[in-house]
Length: 252
Image (cartoon, rainbow, N blue to C red; front, side, top):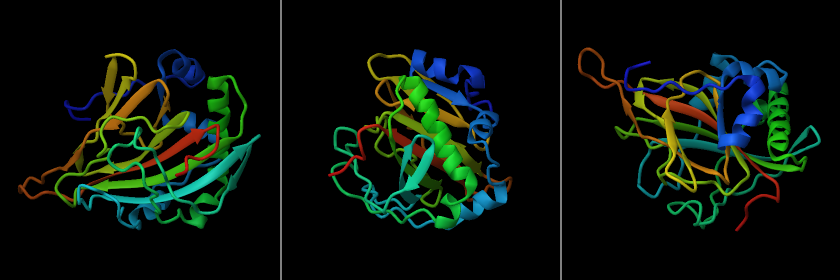
């Protein structure tokens, strides 16, 4: 980790729930994720294959070509996980001033990926954690987003809309990989005050879990590293974002 990067405040697995209740967010290491997923996570090569072949996001209003994306929706109920028919992703303008207010139809996540045993265990396990944090046990409406932000344009913006909330109950952001980049710093702020924290996720399958009603978040732009020759190297940052909402999906 370079001196410009800040170590993430990793929370012990046993303290994740209490930490989110207390401060609105927590950062978990990959060991915690493997524990509650109760199944083997895909290895690096398998994950790379899923993120290497994704279509460009056609909705970027800044005209950029730095974001690739897939999307899928699920219902998690009493430990079960059911994929629902492919649907548009929608956010009201109050949560996304740049891309809100319109239906965005992204290419679906691959069946071969989301049908692996780890996937339903991952979504159901996180659902149990969200229920425990909220002291409720509802049906969760989950949207899954695969993102690749790259340096094709010289700079890539993970959150072009800036610091924001998503209009859900909980947001789980997993770092899948980062290669050949600097930047991509995660920032979390109290939605009702000046308090904030910044750090850089670097470990594959490390996780930021957010109470979306209490905090806002963003990730800073990424830039390519330079080789000793001075040439820029291609770089990217891959993430998986899962949002959990109690009262149905957000629709137009």
